Image 1 (cartoon, rainbow, N blue to C red):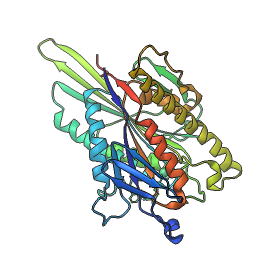
Image 2: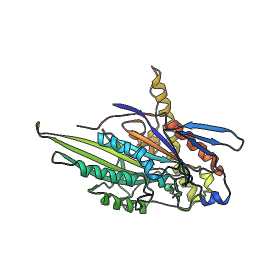
Image 3: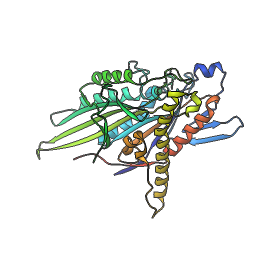
Image 4: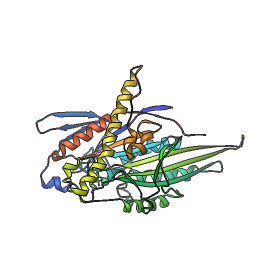
Length: 358
Ligand code: ADP
Ligand code: MG
């Protein structure tokens, strides 16, 4: 069993039109892995992460593009998946901060494609290169969103009634009856990703005209079957890759939400509030383990659908990376500071991943 901390990266996006129109100033500075945020009264908060990515200005020497983000985080996670570990990458941050850009980006554009399409592409390249008479791969994909605490099957949006939470002894919680499709090539997976992206619920808010109000989970299950000619025995390794684009982390109030939007906000926040609690408890538990003789903390995974489905990725059998997406602008100071604190807590979590092999 391998214990490792959650890997945490922070990525600052360029100023958007709204911020430019208001002549916003940057409150973020990055040096090596350190991110610093400075408040109006001059108060400085500094955090150390595994990576601090500056994508604010393309002409800047420190500018980090989609390829580098993938090479730092995605490649390592894909390698773990091939070793037989469950892996998870999730993006957190306020609406418009760059979560979907980082996770999905533009799958059709070689420069702008995000972590998910890059990882899928590499996965098939590796499968094609390494498959042989004695090593066979199979890849299965599902794509769901959680909207107002309800799951929605993005590969079959009409499949509403049968999605039930279940638990697998090895792979952990999952949704029964969720569409899972076998894919044989990058093109297959690309088509499904495209179909699912179109089905995602989007709604306008004051923050971002196409902001996503739901959590999206793209899951790939990779099975590697090896045949040993000498012993005539088969072994199988199964790894689950969960790629998660969370809903905006802002409080309902700051997006001018009313009516249905406010209700969405409450439910979205239920998952995010619970995620925050789960992260805090796990961080506490991980720091206690360094001491001795303390009782296990109760972690409220079951209090939201998101945390239940991500249970193994957060505190259990998984290698996990988090990307905290932030705006550079002074007008988003409070939200950005809250995201940076969230990411700081997540960094303290230790997961105990084991290889899924039999
Ligand atoms: P979120 O998913 O967090 O709501 P998006 O990913 O949709 O935010 O990003 C909002 C806008 O900012 C999009 O138009 C996106 O293309 C742009 N953007 C976000 N991050 C970056 C980045 N690192 N570089 C360039 N553009 C970005
Ligand atoms: Mg988004």
